[in-house]
Image 1 (cartoon, helix red, strand yellow):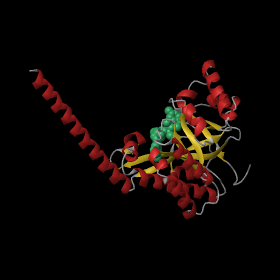
Image 2 (cartoon, protein in one colour):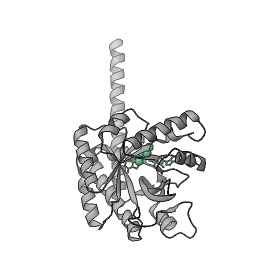
Image 3 (cartoon, rainbow, N blue to C red):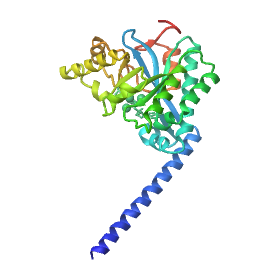
Image 4 (cartoon, rainbow, N blue to C red):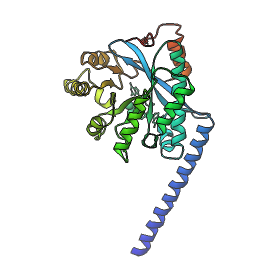
Length: 291
Ligand code: C2E
Ligand code: MG
Ligand code: MG
Ligand code: MG
């Protein structure tokens, strides 16, 4: 009786394993076809310099323009990409797209940079360093254009190796940002070891900063810590002018969020910022090379 039950359980476990495997195989096939068929594209969310009240860059966020389901967010496909053999070709494409779009703005005199979300293997294989050098050359970029965003939750197999490769990317003109800071537990180690330029403070930390004193103190502490380490601090998830004003008073450098702008298709950021028919809430930083 017991044995039969046990066997039944095993059979069940086996069946679900198999199901899961088949399911993920299907997902892989679909996502691979979407990527290779040009259905994956980047949306761009503006990043504001709080002091200058102008847009100094964008974050590239992956979208799947699905023929039947419409526009799908990264939660539907990005893990399939980064956890499969698609990861490195995707990383190369991502950096090349960022370079291409940055070039359109640089050519009009706006030295914006573009943030890309990188996964562990894209960094640890050295793929970004290679892609960065070739994209810069291929698109003829003379100004820095890339911010490499590393998630606070990224687990590096070899932290020294990752640090060395990120430093190489910096030597090629990229900036390094620690993404979703304050949402995990590895933050403090990373802040002191990775060759960072920017801390991106997670939305869960900046939420209610305008209304709650405890939040204000906490965020103020993070900003002071960042500055003491020579880093720029960016507040994520800014949804109102009150929140933005609070962060300005706390000395925060950069902000990103729906109040500044939603993630938009490439054609929309071109239209809104490079060829505006009416002034956007926040305009582009004026010139290349302005201090
Ligand atoms: P993330 O890098 O932290 O990107 C910010 C996310 O917060 C975006 O979600 C954005 O739409 C959302 N967001 C921005 N401002 C606001 C706001 O004011 N309020 C609220 N409620 N949300 C806001 P999205 O586009 O769904 O991306 C989710 C995550 O997917 C990203 O988080 C990033 O970790 C990952 N991701 C996106 N594109 C890529 C990619 O190309 N490669 C990799 N490896 N990961 C990516
Ligand atoms: Mg990010
Ligand atoms: Mg983030
Ligand atoms: Mg996030």
